[in-house]
Length: 139
Image (tube, rainbow, N blue to C red; front, side):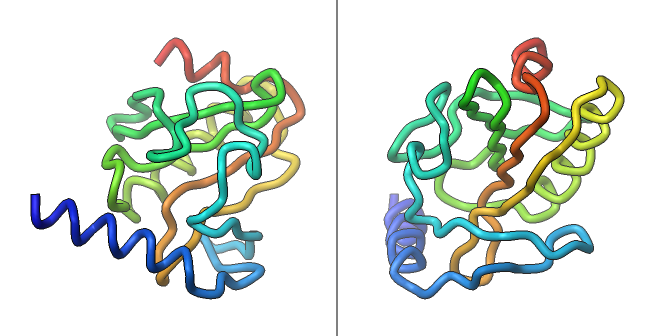
């Protein structure tokens, strides 16, 4: 319980810090959302909670993640499995696998951002050319 309280406090406090406009993620410069961003700020209306973010459990290439969507599946957001911490390796590898899944199914990534706070990435946000969330629903 103590660890959960500490993680929650860290998450809240990191939302109060300034978020840079862009960061390096998986070898490319991407825009950012603050950890304080809401589901509506990120255009998410499916499988998204204001308290914990993405809520749909998925497994992609053996990596456990959570996903949310919006705009009829053209917006997809992934987070690591834990609700109150982050797993950088899972997010980096999960994002690479997801990008490959989209590409293999003819879906283009129009933009990519990360949820960033306290020096860590908490999620990856994709805007797509077509409904990519339908692919994740079956995982």
